[in-house]
Image 1 (cartoon, rainbow, N blue to C red):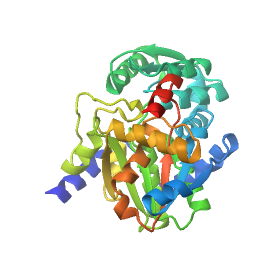
Image 2 (image 1 turned 90 degrees about the vertical axis):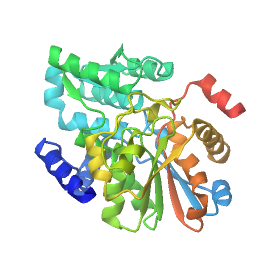
Image 3 (image 1 turned 120 degrees about the vertical axis):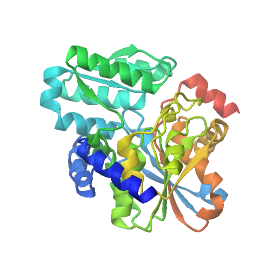
Image 4 (image 1 turned 45 degrees about the vertical axis):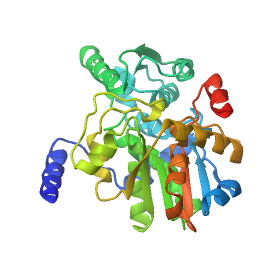
Length: 336
């Protein structure tokens, strides 16, 4: 039953017009992304390596100009769509990091950008979007409500709508960070990546499983937003109708088609972590390598401590996917 369902779902998925990125697509995107962004550091941590009993490397995507990995996808998308984007203007929805990526790319290519964000996102993220020249529109209490409103605006006003999760060009740009990992650490054994929408871990699976299927790739979700976790186990897309987590970068209330299709058959497992575990991981990252991570950006580190026994003796990369956190909140987390 499961195999039959998957084949039928794959057939309908391809007919509906979605395109699954390839390793070659990501390599092509890397050539564009590298013109606008420098590679981020892959930092070895002796302290965390001792704590976990393995060789731990942090991929510091929190050091991007927007303090998050998604800027890679935003730049590549806007580069490829720049003529239409300039003509129509762009609208998208985001809890923060995707918003900044599209706003940043819009500022590079001269595109008018409007971002729909849910109420309650950190002020630092909304302010960062405005500073990049984009208009912020608040609507809804979580991502899906914002996304539906952005789609409505695109239909009514003629804007080019960028789906933050089901747009393949974003994955191709984001995948450049995993190519950098392979270039610097070709003998990596395990990669752990947070999963909110899914572009980070999906592009990672395409890269690592193409290079060497034995490389293990784990996704991490918040316990209060386990839509993909549930979808992964049930074999069908799940809509939770809401979320309960302070990790806004992981606050997706439903699973989406493109990452579901990419990760089925490629991903090794999905792990869940609590907000308190992510807060502890924020403290560990700051103490070990003096880097600022938001809760979602520290999710991979939190997960590593959950599965530490299975990591012993391995070469492990923990993706620090973002560092957009308000100062007061960060200080509060450090104080515990």
